[in-house]
Length: 486
Image 1 (cartoon, one colour):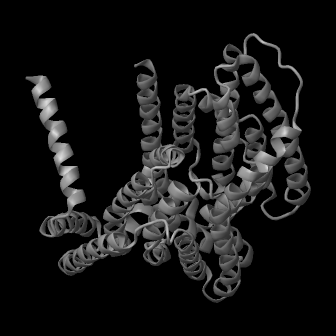
Image 2 (tube, rainbow, N blue to C red; image 1 turned 60 degrees about the horizontal axis):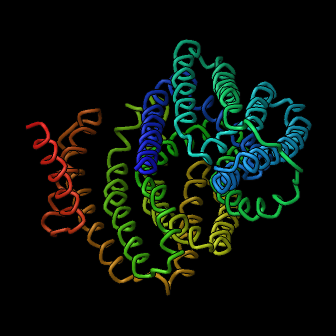
Image 3 (tube, rainbow, N blue to C red; image 1 turned 90 degrees about the vertical axis):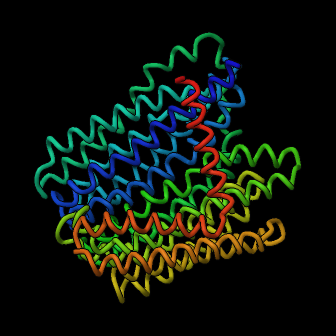
């Protein structure tokens, strides 16, 4: 009973943090877009992408590996202590090398030297990040409280201190120091969990191979996500283009959080089901995951494409008109990334098929690299957006090929067609609404309300089982609350 209670508590703590990181961009992005301008946002996106590469390689994937290794020995204080210090030493060594290379290459240059110097704090912060230890011993409360505290303070400081385009360095400093101090804060709790027991012989070598095996799929996926921003910032001198690209990506990433949220829950469930060899249950989970992705991503794709022109000036302010075009181009990513999340994150990785997952992402990187060189030179941020869509499609196709005999596709295709038709009709109605309303907030609100009503109406007309299941569960919950109050 206590174990179940602990799982529920950890879930609730994570849920609170996920809601927070979903809300905060809605608060800060409109303000920063107006204060820093497209160029300021572009410079930050580009320089932060560069330092992220060094954090990534310097950390060597220890966050995920460390969480897993600590979880294996969470009840053995001696072993837990030993693993912790071994991984901390490994991370300090690799990050020290990363810091040296970063300082020599970027902090000695003339362009953006101030920003690169401040972002060195991010590299140092990564060295002191031990959140993986607390996640491994299932003490999610401390990491979540730390994250919430740091985020709220940093956002408050941004509104108080960052006032003009010249304050870009202050914005970078606030978030870098927040990460650094937030990571240091966790070390205060550490002695309580490392009491007693000798460390024993430190063996660093035993972690290298398993670290690399887990690191490769992580690094390929991260490079794939950062490549377009880095290349756009390097090829195009006008950093406004990077700013437009970054802001449009923020909108899509915000929506993707909702689409891919189920993946966090399904990964351990799929791994456990795979271990028992229950293929029938795996296919049932996969179908439900696809159903969840399709029912949400199709209307989101058509919806954000419909309102983007009116939404962008309201959310980002003047001067971001091009971001509306980029959002329309990016909208299919909601479906494509949703498919990858189900096949790659929820199926290939839990069933120990990292090789196929890595090959699919590397294929996307190669396609993205080639197309970025061509398209960015031709169409700047629009070219980068098109290249990203095509490369993501390649990732999906490769993954589908690898699981072609493991998943029943016919019922999934029928599901996709149903939601595509319902969403297309919704989009058509939204276009009619645009004709009778202005291009401001009224148009956005009307399209959202009418579009949602039409989409739900179409699913009811189609007698969609997934929707009926959701409605039945809501009715059951409401009925339980009413009975409890009575």
